[in-house]
Amino acid sequence: MSSDEYDAYLKSILEYNEAKAALDTAFYDGKLEGRIEGKLEGKIEGETAKAIEVARAMLAKGFAVDVIAEITKLTVQEVDALSS
Picture 1 (cartoon, rainbow, N blue to C red):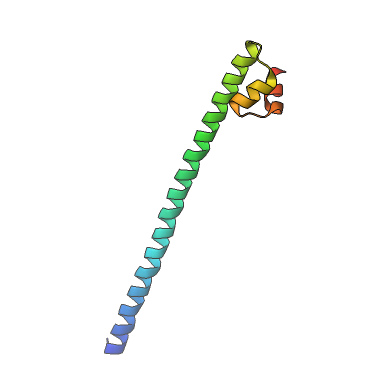
Picture 2 (cartoon, one colour):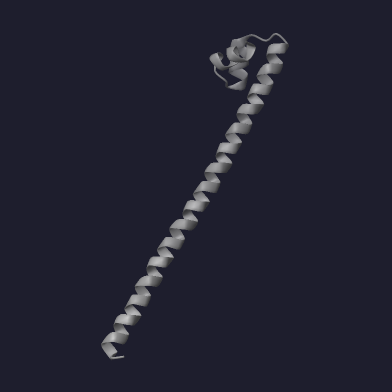
């Protein structure tokens, strides 16, 4: 192998390693972002489920819909739907 061929070979290896590192980083970043989004979605779903549970209990105790909406941060429409 000539010196020029060897240099081209080393350059191709370097370019490959750089491209692989970029792809690996993008893959890792994507996985991390997906995990963060999943945790956030789970937290929001849990908070909403708890608000609905509290709203149902308040409805059963005779609280006014607007008061329940204010306390639970649900909309009046969402609380009305629970009372149906």
